[in-house]
Image 1: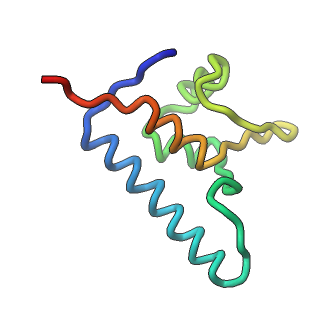
Image 2: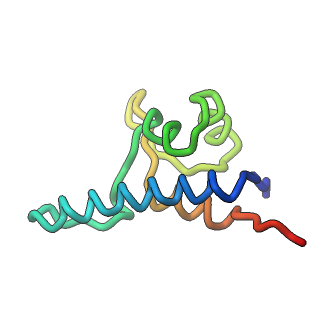
Length: 96
């Protein structure tokens, strides 16, 4: 398993963005389109923006099986729940 380290502030920022997406999604669900966060999918551009990575890095994550994805034709999609799970699994606290 590869460990990705980042500053705590960057990690918290990413989590806040994911939670913001979750809140928006819940608002949509409250309006009659009920789905769970696990069913929310993002495209590569959205994932790159959230994780602050390049499309090439995202491609490498796919090739190295770091980030699960689904592909329909040329369109590659990622579950929000998978992104959040990976971030939480690989979270490294500063050891003193």
